[in-house]
Length: 384
Ligand SMILES: NC(=O)c1ccc[n+]([C@@H]2O[C@H](COP(=O)([O-])OP(=O)(O)OC[C@H]3O[C@@H](n4cnc5c(N)ncnc54)[C@H](OP(=O)(O)O)[C@@H]3O)[C@@H](O)[C@H]2O)c1
Image 1 (cartoon, rainbow, N blue to C red):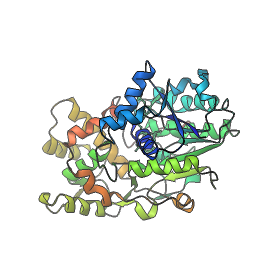
Image 2 (image 1 turned 45 degrees about the vertical axis):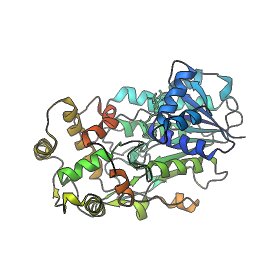
Image 3 (image 1 turned 30 degrees about the horizontal axis):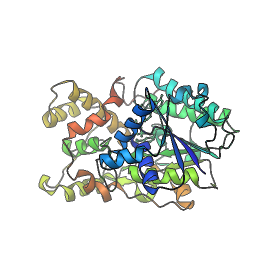
């Protein structure tokens, strides 16, 4: 029987994985490592996340199917809980996903991941350790079609501490844990759910809507942004976790050349989904021109209050990523037999259906921008 240890069950992707797995009701036993004071509290935290995908009663029923191990993955090597002994698969999703703030992020995403890997060495039945990284470890100067094997690279120019820490974790896992059955999956940009729209999370969706409202973009109409929905990511991660044989150790979980989104198509999808806002005429602006974006943002959203100030900084930060014009090759994934994802223009209308105000949706991402380092656009030094 599969015994799957999941970290990050209370997060966006972890919740999506768990919801699909528990609904599927296969024989696998899921063990969730959750930060909590007691098993009951941990179960309630998992149920609260599952309730974003289903009704609260079903969420409670599903949450009762999992084993909860209270704990912090960054101290997993000190946790000799016997329930972890028989684990056959590890799906490591937990991470500090805030963009700014160096030390804490490195401690969690790098040092913490190594602590979990050390604990995995004491799992004698382990078949696979699926570490979830991010495709954005390629940094700001990558070629427009990014291939898995080119990264992590010591000369990558990271825009934020988060991607730097994820690159460092991959480097150290490869160097120090060659004895473990580690596979790395790197999602691109996860936005919405192809069937439930924004209900599970409006993370990043708010910024795409904000760009539409601002009618400003920092790149041309053919520029690409590689976006995938959470449900497809969850299904694909589960597939990679349990597929007995894999050809590679590294996979992008991405749209690739077929499903990556072009701005032109995204704008047309907005026009089709929200025709009352008319035909969109976008202005292209230079990211260094902070004043123009600030002025336009103030006109459209106002700049009253701390929340909107943070939202402006976050919008600027996301624009910096959008301007990179990156597509993450997914041929490896498709060659393993996984289905390609739908592109964002194909499910945008679902995400916009009944969506709350943009400023309210931003609340889903606010924590990521809690400690600002405002030098967006200036690459950070790499120390993997
Ligand atoms: N979302 C994306 O667009 C995207 C794109 C590429 C890659 N990824 C990667 O995918 C993974 C999941 O992302 P996500 O968007 O689902 O993240 P998320 O919603 O921010 O969730 C993060 C999860 O990590 C847990 N966590 C953080 N520190 C922990 C600790 N010390 N001990 C135990 N649990 C801890 C959080 O638990 P609490 O609830 O206790 O805080 C939460 O469950 C991450 O590794 C991220 O780098 C995400």
